[in-house]
Image (cartoon, rainbow, N blue to C red; front, side, top):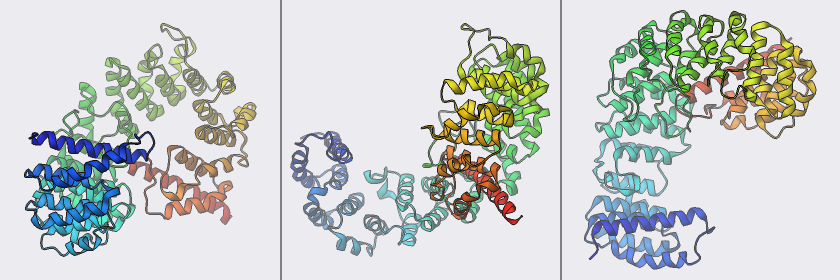
Length: 579
């Protein structure tokens, strides 16, 4: 007799093979596969009566994929039901029948009235009625015994994964997902609370209307005994921009040194520090200065970009955190300068230069440190920062003008155009910079060159022709940047606006790509001549979906920024119309 572990592994292997074959839809699948799978069904059906409960649990999961034999399998699942003593297996029988619908639908409907709440829940799942029966679902999870789900292969084997799975299957049912998410954080089981607060993250970062109902439970759980619940509640409060009334709570959480994950150094305290800093609360200053002065920076060296689900508690990058704090530059610049002198890797040098770029003229005291970067691996970002500082960076001109003292002594294309732009910003002499950027345009596509050229406005009139050619480029970014630059250079929106309008046609659907966001911002600059965009802009503003592309804290930040751009564009259009 084979060991149980070997049997379970065999069942799991068959499921994986079947799922892979289904995803391939016949492409690249051995022609003998359907016959081989059909031959495995009788042994699997016999396994429903196996003496070992682990085999029976895995078998229900496997049989849920037996769609070609659905009728036979459902009959056998129903026949096993009265004799099955294990609740976990019974839930599996129900869920497997649901996968093989419409066979067994009448049986499943009857199970919605079963005396066991978890059977009711499984039947509701199997029938795809989670949204319609959301009160039943909430009651079964919040008040029932979830022990039977802990060893169930269908939903990850934990209460957290069960909650996550239910939320995922609710899909686009906004109201049902809000109701479900509001009721889970109060559960006695921390695993359920974790699942609930994670579900709340996805819901909050998807729909604007979720905030009023989900915000109070988040605030209540800032002192939850479970660290994961605390971290998600605090992160969502800060990311959503609603931390203002709760800054004293955030200040108290600066003492919470619980790690956000086993793999990183970031702490719950760092979420509180971020929230206080972006709220302009001076209680953030000591923590920021401590991390900068000691070099123990716990914020990422680069931007973390990921999708909208699951919600992640990743922190903003260091330059993203500090970039908004120009008002504190007089306090922070000395610490940034000191850390920049000690920086021993390009990632840290880059992120500090990007911070100084964001501060512009306020970063002028750091010119000596930026100048020293021009002969190294951070030249690109140092040049951009010096350009942002402007005339106060005059002492860096000799280093900007000469070839870099590197092994090659050469600059990349993007380094050349950025250096040219920086020289113009510092000296006010546009001609050398325009010649270099124009050459880059003639040599091929360059988003950076197009973006920088827009800054020159009418001074770049001699480059009108290559800008017009770029309007028909194959790349979305090239077309959008060329349209903006053409308008800035000529003052004529005639050819620019149609390109920008075409880019945002999908805006009412709620998913805004980065290039669409840029086009929205440019339409806001153009104003009245972009009147044709008004219906699209109004539709996007009226929708409940957040206007984001990335997930985590960016979902809120992107939505807020894009709505500001939309309102700005509409205000300028409407003002011009009124006149």
